[in-house]
Every structure is written in structure tokens, then in C-alpha cells.
Length: 238
Image (cartoon, rainbow, N blue to C red; front, side):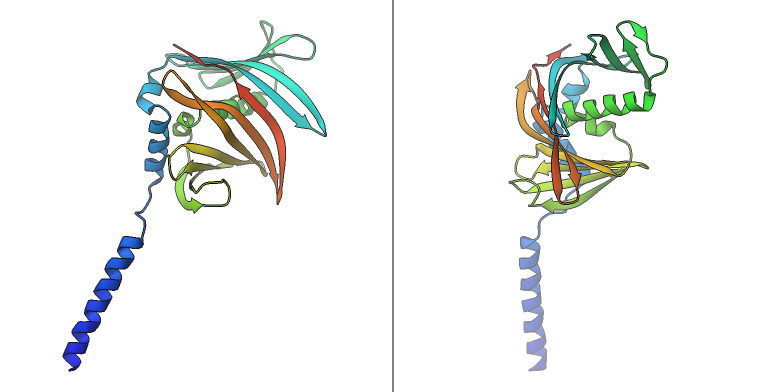
């Protein structure tokens, strides 16, 4: 009798174990989530074949109850001397260009280099812009420890998968649609300040799905303060 009970108990345990395994979701991997997002957006292989991406950007910034409108031209070049450039007119009408040329940062007023510019500020501006405008393809350029944090049902109106990338002095949290794989937003922590960039609208440009309307917020505890509305124009590729 005891032997039969033992066999019966094993059978129940086996059934319960199989049922649990069926209900459990497969283990997610950070790179597979990012790969799915890049494929959804047009494919990393196709993106890396581009020599140049160029477009216009309109940014409305909100600070202390006032709004300021800024129009920029962005050019990102690859090749032997990769460059990232952001150009705009300042309040005096001078043409300002922030540039990353082979990892070195410069500022030009009209055609003259500003040798007194804060290069760290230029670096932050260029990298932040590239991070936002070329989602999700720019994620592969980040260095640091990558970790899958699980599913999230509170940040967006749909369930998202969260991947974190940590460097020495900054950290990102990327939110990907669990359903489609597309990137929905990312949070960025640097110097104790956390911002959230949300992709409101994306559009197809020559086979690539890229952001065209983005909102950027500052997260201050439970408060979420709108910093910028950003509209991106049609891209041209070479």
C-alpha cells in the first residue's frame, strides 16, 4: 500500500511539474530583445551599410514656464573619419555647429572653431542627440554591463521588456514592446539626474522605422516634468 501511494505521489508531482513548465515563460536574453528591436526597425546589417544619415529637427524646450523653439540640422557620417554634426542658429543669428569627429569634440561659430568651448557639454549634447534620433540602432554603440530586468506593465500602456546597460557614471533602461519588439522609450541616469525619452510616433524611411515625434521628461521622484517636444524631419540616406 505504501509503495502504491509513493508511485501515486510521484505521478502527481510529475504532472504538476509539467504544468508549471508549460505556464512558465521562456527565459529572455538581453541581446535577443535588442536584436528583435533592430530587425523590427529595418535590420542592423542594412543600417550599418549606410554612409550618411541627414535630417532636420525641430525642438520645443520648456523651462520655468517658458518655451523656446530650436531648429537643427543633423548629419551622421560613417567611413574612415566618422562624424556626427548638429548645426543651428543661436540668438544672435550665428551658425553654431557641435561636432564629434573621430571621437574628438568641437564647436564652431560660423566657420571659426571655439577653442574655449566646454567640450564635455558638446560631447553630452551630441551623444544624447544621436541616442534619441537613431533608436534602436545606436544601442549597440553603448559600452557597459547589460542586464535583462524582466517585464514591466506600469511604464507604458502595453507590457514591455526592460534591458539595462550600466557604465561607470551613467545608466540606461530600455523599454521594448513585448508584443512587437519595437523600442518604446528609455530612461537615462547621469550625474544624479534621470530623464525619460518616449517615442510617441515612428515612421518608415526607406525601409527603416525611426522616431519622428519624441517627448523628453525629467523624472523627479514621483514628478514627471516635460522638458522637450521633438519633431524629426524626413531622413535622407547615402
